[in-house]
Image 1 (cartoon, one colour):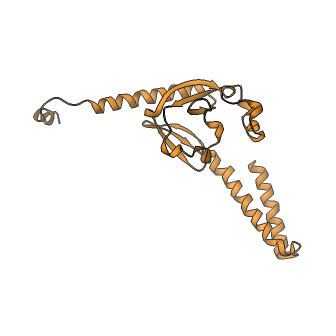
Image 2 (cartoon, helix red, strand yellow):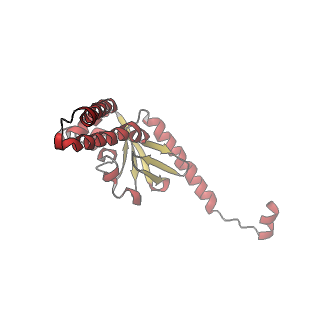
Image 3 (cartoon, helix red, strand yellow):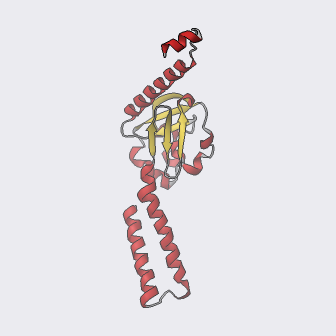
Length: 186
């Protein structure tokens, strides 16, 4: 896609420059060439740079879902379960739009990770505005993640959740000793 947009942009730039400097053949519609060139440039930047940063990161205190334009931090306290699933369990291939079919055709039958959530973070209330709808489960609330190694993702998230829980439990325990005993430890 990036290559096609780059070629389209270069052709439009050549036509716009030819119209501006050599022979004005576009007449009163010269501004349309520059307008379309700007749109193509914005799309190229989106596909070349912004789309590459999309992904999921397992951090010590949260699961970070990064889209091209927005990132969301999901606390491990919101995660109910992490299971394996398939796209066909959530979506019927024939009912999808043609664009969505072309996006998921290669991994429609493969195993994915499904992270079931007990509630959505406030930043994901308008999730379909910032992320594709295929990222979210239909029958249950959660994230449907197609990754090359779903088992490793499940293990990493479970390990981070366990460490998060242990850290919270350690923070909740009160020290029953006197203040003098606590000071002597330091």
